[in-house]
Length: 304
Ligand SMILES: [Zn+2]
Image 1 (cartoon, rainbow, N blue to C red):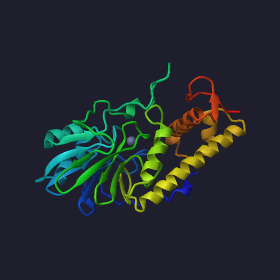
Image 2: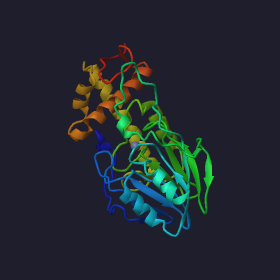
Image 3: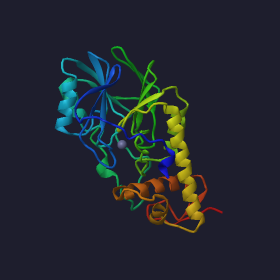
Image 4: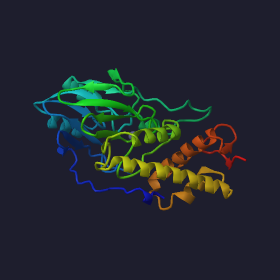
């Protein structure tokens, strides 16, 4: 299913060792590899002398130490956070305490929709609910530092508060978990929402940035073309779900088995939530019916 996207899994990084990914931007990868993080979360350092950090990363003393080591004898003036998953933002308090930097983000963690009655949030453990930015950014806000300017690009979908950051005059976008070179992004209700996610992809496809620096995996060159592959992939997945419903399949586990062939077993739960995200969107658009609210254990059919 995903072979249509030209994935790039080449990433030759030593954890917790800084390298310069493009002139003026360094990166330090945390040592937290896994099925959702690839080889680890990547923190970026913008500028030289007076710098900004994008996504300090997980609450891991080794990573925090390596990040602070990389900026020794420099001044960290700004911290930008793309979203509040536990592999991206929990290092903020330690990095802020050590540097006095001001923290910018869209806002605290929140779900894309209220919980249904009786529903529990399967993603609770993945969220950093302690995070609060010093400055809440609106879409399009521009923040200026020493030799760089950052534009906030609201990109809800992976989480409701997901923000990408465009490095002005450089055609570079810090893409967080919204678009990655190594795998598709996870869109899982209730924290994520497919309709928001698709709108955010279409928004990026129209922008001028050509190089994306994501939260996991290698840089994405030719980014608008890659985003279009992402859009086509989601449309194909939606078509597969409609096709399975047309064949009389009615529940999420059966649909997951049919369309995620050869999936890493550790990702089955996420795949189910991704199908739920599509079904929520299809029900909202009147193409699919279910009884009550779309739920992970719901029964679905094509609308007639
Ligand atoms: Zn994430």
